[in-house]
Image (cartoon, rainbow, N blue to C red; front, side):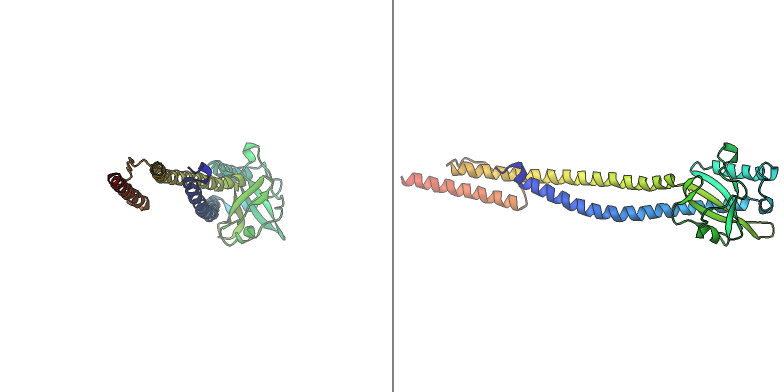
Length: 271
């Protein structure tokens, strides 16, 4: 009898598992890539929607009046409180802030962390390396294609224009989601697919092992019957009932045993 390593069951199981691994690995790679892109795109749409809602609620005329050093005045505090409430309504949002153009660059006006001890900028603080999306937000809502660095960390951002009573754009509002939150969403998809992949391979291997074990069991029965016949024992009963090649082989063995019995009986009568 062949050892376990060289048995047909081991070879069949290993072959099918390798085939399943190749197929699922390719599927996994394409699925993860497409899923992470969809997650990032849906997150960007979420940020765009929140930025647009926030911009529509802000008073552009009041924000346009804010100058450096006015952080303690009621005009600033009222608008900062409004941003803080909006930011706190969604625990995944790390910061909401307003920005306006100044000369060749941009400067911060308000951020939402003033009343929780997390105010990171004051009126007039320059925006370090303003992005293309921030400039384009003056014409309509925009979102960053990748993570950007702020004074409060790495984030994914959405922007929308802030307008005054005349409909003129006086600045933009930015909504930042922590990069860890976005990455966590994408990692969740990957981890879920890993679990599905593992379960698929395990189930496939188990099913293949069960089928191959049944087949090998019948082959072993035929081998044992052949060994007994080779020792002159024709009192062999083969109880294999299959509709495949092994079943045909079992039928051939039965006919062979019957033929041997007939020949042995004739030889006995001749003697």
